[in-house]
Amino acid sequence: VFADDRPACAVAWSVLPQMIMKLPQKVVEGVNARTYRDVVAIHRGVGRERVVKGHGVYYPEPEDPFYRVSFPSNMAPSTAPPGCTSIIAEVAVDPGSPLDETKVTEDCIGALIRSGVISAHDPILLKKCYRLSPGYVVYDAARANSVEVIGDYFKEMGIIPAGRFGEWRFFNMDHTIMSGLKAAATITGGDGP
Image (cartoon, rainbow, N blue to C red; front, side, top):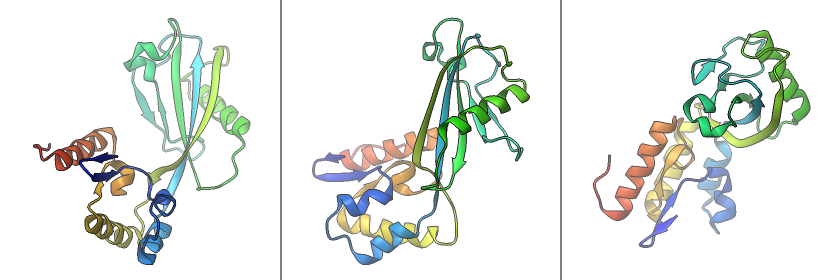
């Protein structure tokens, strides 16, 4: 994103070597040292309205293939046809690991049935599987140095980092929005959050 010749970076650092020619070697090393997990988002449309009351549930049990399940239609009814529920199950996987979409989708449906979220008789009207790479930043021993090296490069080049991937931090949606507002304020000279 560019505004008044002031670029902002909200993309995953892994693409920087393809976007910026002659990236300094220490920045390339910082990019290569960062650790992340991919997220496989399994979207399902279920032919029953409001299968649960809440918006999302975390699953810490190792036998469940997903770590979080959300129900977008409980918050925004327009995300599912009338009488239906939209469900998204999130599965963390290693970057670049092979993915059997059919198996992960069926494993998630089976776990949702076992946990009582849906029944075996609920019609599954939609099955979609998307891989988000990167999905989540991992805070490991190399992260702090990568953030410092790349952050220094951004400052030197006048690049304003924004969002989870521009700042290489774990952000929930609120933090991501605040980061974007802060970047916009920096670019425009306005008041930030």
